[in-house]
Amino acid sequence: MFDVFLSYAREDRERARAIASALQTQGWSVWWDRNIVAGESFDRTIETQLESARAVVVLWSVHSIGSEWVRNEAAAASEREALVPALIDDVKQPLEFRRRHAANLTAWNGDLADPEFLVLHQGLKAKCELHRDTSAEDGNATVPAAPSAAKTAEVRASTAKALNSGRAMANVVSTRPYMIVAAIAGAVTLLSLLWIISRRTDNTSGTASLQRANLRAPTSGDGSAASRSASSAAAPAPDLATESRTLEPSSEIGRDADHPAPIAFNTISRVRLQNNQAFYLRLPAAARDVDIVLDMRLVDDVRSNLLASLSVLDENGGEVRKSIIAFNEIDRMWRKTATHSAPQAARHAFRILNTAQTADFWLTIRRAGATGVVPFFGETVPKPLEVGRAYRGRLATNDDAYYRAPLARGDYQVVLEFALQPVQRSNIIGSLSTLDASGGNATRVIAINEVDVSSRKTGRFSVSSLEPVILRVQNSHNAVEYVLRVEPAPAGTAH
Image (cartoon, rainbow, N blue to C red; front, side, top):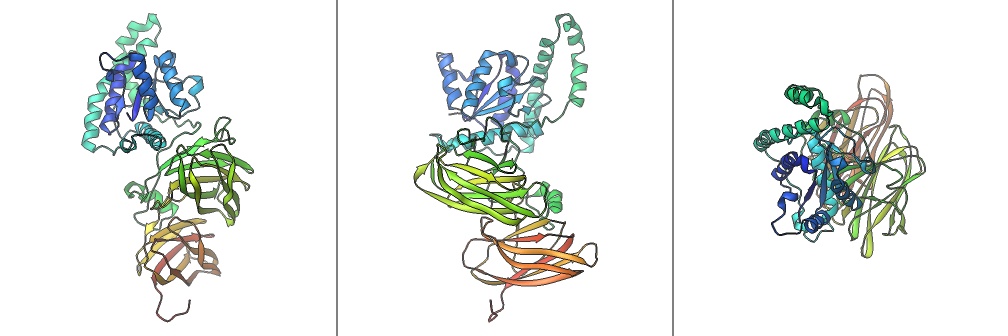
């Protein structure tokens, strides 16, 4: 079984070869019609590979948009949610596929770090993950590692010639006959100019459009939104490798139990819902016990009612557990978790119902017992915390910082100090809560609500499990600088 089936028009063979070579360099196994062995039935071989590949990359060009073969292959891939489209010419996808986001490779020069090639790479990762659990050869579905810088340069150099040649041919085909001679004469100059001015990112959103993972852990600072932005370039990977996938409700996906959005294990699926709007999702493979992680954040980022629920459904959309997760908080964002156990392996489905103002939801389904942290709200990974060490940072209004500590069983004392920035006498409102290893089951330990220049408070909490504890520092008013320190509780002190 191959990871990738490559669909293209025969006129684009050299460009297809360059893309196939680049994907293979990254570790993907790629099938295209050059793999057919003499004596094999052409149609039967293509059909077999098309149906078994974990992902189908369709290269849309001035030639392929009119190819019945390519359209049929794209339709077959779309039916089983394996389609990953890419534009190699500046054309519109055929109407039936236009709602899907395509990687824009019209200006790609073989650079494996090119943003649009990374969009293609992330799309392949998502599709291979989606189909991995239904594969009989699951061991072959590992996601390839990124190539080295030297390999990237080598591939870029070796593919540029083929790509440029293919683009020149596409320009000739799309030019009126009486302009062919002039087009050929000016091809070199024109392509050079287009290369400079046409590098653009086509971020057209579409149903189930895929986005690159945006999982960032602060390497310094406080873990707030401001410091996350500054430190993302050097951020380490989170404990649990996850992919971020944005889903958009439409007439074709997620609107009811008969049209659920497909989701994969260990994938963060994000959806924005209006008041009283529901969204349906379904796993591709059967499982018995699953862990559920659901984040909710109000779009306007103000402190208000969080009212929503998540219910577990069976494969046909019937309700199995109503409101296994229920939000009913006064806040601007929150995480809740749950575990669902079924009598036997089943293909679970889910319904998210928002009954508050417009909010974003991040849903992650893991097989029961999975370890590691699912990034909060698709991007925030807690910063490691050491007992006895003071951590300083800055929080803007309605900002948060997360820390994670593997603490031994026992009692702990925590000290939290807020100082207004700029220094002034005003409201200081914030809190510190402990969360479990999955980021759920929040328990408030310290609450600050003072009118002053600064405020320091202490609290105490107990650890009875060997699983790490997550601390959430929340600022709910004016910008502050904070100091956080966790220490073993003094012996003999009351809880």
